[in-house]
Image (cartoon, rainbow, N blue to C red; front, side, top):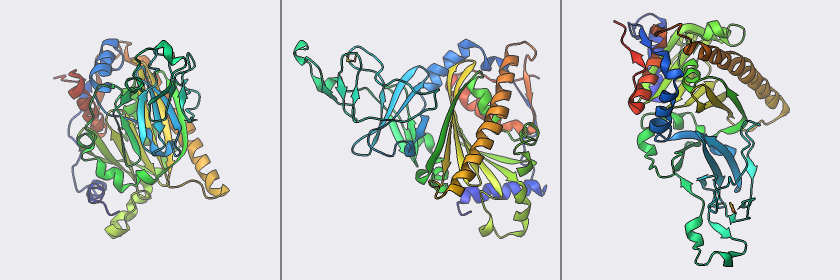
Length: 393
Ligand code: FES
């Protein structure tokens, strides 16, 4: 471990384990369940947050070759991410400029396949666009006297790739300050080497839960040894986690059972994957979990107040080098995606969704080990102007 902020966080976690430092907030807090189910609140989030903030749209390793194309609908916006012949990744609205037909059929929800195209031909009247979005061909072009093809290229969305992660804005008229947005977390992305990772698998699922309920499940460690008692609980120490706010983003560190070795090891021998697990919340809707030899990138795309398209991209340091390594990562994927995320975290989020509008809880109470949830919702509130955390005294 040689990245100074990681070392500093690790020292804090060690102090917590040794009971030397009181790093936890002292008080409980309360939140209103309304923000998880009211359509009016969802409309606020759609307009003020998701149409204004850079969002994680994928990983560049999904699109290794010119012509590789990712089709993704986000908040009703049909998107195309395309690797051009110049190897740049561009983002477009997946909409024909003639009469507005969707250009590529969405594959999402069916496995999230990446398409390969040499151009984009609209099925309706066969207008043809190049990989960089330029309109290349119009059948019977004489029927459009004065048509300026240069003015009818595909509509671009703001897009940037940082350390392999593709960030974009779904409003084509928005401007994106990606460096300002990622300030504070950009060094972490570089330190973990995200840019060089391989996409081992990508899984999508549509679940009946508010996107924030799913985010919440990955923001606190209180549940880890309880909800996950038949899967990953034996790997982790209870209560041992610390969090740093990095602007609207978060860096969390959880102690694995091996963390007890740290007290007797020089700092140069601390291993950020073996002794502990880093987890990040990239605001607003992405979680990164760094397991010992792979990384899970989870992005929650809201579709309604009570429905979310969940996307898990499993990243490995490289492509499997032999059958044994492939088998190891395949079994890891089965455990983490099927056994942990789907069957436990997402299942529980759906069960919680049912309770949100029931009237059982006028407010909900969060303890000292759930403070990261408060930070996250305060960041959401800064964008929406709403108030999730409520005063109960
Ligand atoms: Fe696409 Fe007519 S709508 S070519």
